[in-house]
Length: 514
Ligand code: SAH
Ligand code: ZN
Ligand code: ZN
Ligand code: ZN
Ligand code: ZN
Image (cartoon, rainbow, N blue to C red):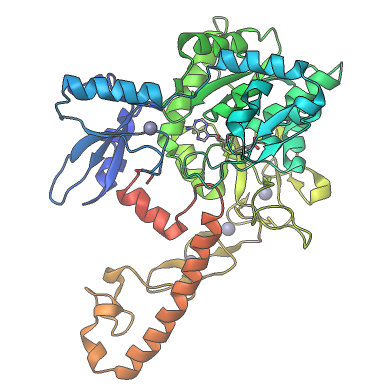
């Protein structure tokens, strides 16, 4: 293995050498990124991480799967300095081969063509194997749950036919509600784009494909890049590439790479936009690395003189990742539009009224161009020059519409910024927080005795002040319930399995996704 000198790891060097690694505390993990010559698992080249041990500056480096947060999905692991024997290398190659899909994309396209020739009564789809069946295969799927009479309309909506892989940490498939999907497409068209690179947005791709086949004057085209290979049963090689967005890996090799390049090339004044909706638990820096690679591919297809342009992009992600995304893409801004999902218990437009989805659009397009639906309560702030949520009030002091979550935020003069409506200024912590928060900063003084150097939980005067201790306990019993609920809510959605507080901790010491 090449030593990680000046040339490695690519793209994420700033991250590896920068403050993130410093922040990775004892026992924590830091992502170093894609390294040249990295070993591969079935999901393409593994990513390089560093495991920090107490008292160590550098940490021990190892490779792990880029795509799977769950070891059950892929348990690839190798120390960077580990000697891997020839036998083990051969076994690994064999394993990787065996863990590729049963059919190639080409085979799947041919199968689809044959499937289309079948009369309705012979069109079957195995729900267990998530596969279109040809008549000579029916026997093999005997006893499986099989859907019959698959119509052409069903074939045009694979995202409805296929089971969303939502429980799998690896895929975290959460499909756009029709309203949000339609909004995105209308917006894309209104902005003048005619080609959409759909990265992990199968439903948007499907909406475009299906309109293109039904409406004559519909001129938008889409290319889907996704790790979910089941889609290769429904789309040709020009419409779908099997792609891993955590390591920018095209499973179809150079041919698939070329398909993507061609898609950018065919841009004869038909402008391209990339739309992506990655799993929320994914590592922002790994995603940013891949998206920059895609942007570079796009740039290479541009004529000279346009070199400093950026490919227009919508990155759909929860609002609490704003600062992380802006770290990598300073030209981006966050829109107030709340993206809703279909198979999402908590963040969809329910009968009882709107549930507040935390998912937003991050874009490098000028905010004033992103027109949000007035009938859903969005309005234009002339000072901020962007559309904002109905509850988002322009703060005179901050001189900005400051709400991130759609609720009206309030200005704290002591913090000198706007904060959530449920927060109060804590003199102990010297910042705003929930009323029932535990004061964490020991230097600010103990909550019980006011002295510096310890927290209330370890306050030496606690054994004396029994009553203080008891009320304290009561308070503490209350808090975990709320915290748990927070975790629960988020775990229901995509990968976001950490409460925000835990997420902050993660950021500090652990960026490995499992
Ligand atoms: N809201 C979107 C779907 C987003 S769910 C829509 O309705 O179109 C996240 C998507 O990312 C899924 O399609 C999933 O298969 C894909 N995905 C998950 N991990 C991926 C990876 N490592 N590389 C590429 N795509 C991935
Ligand atoms: Zn893997
Ligand atoms: Zn404003
Ligand atoms: Zn303010
Ligand atoms: Zn405050």
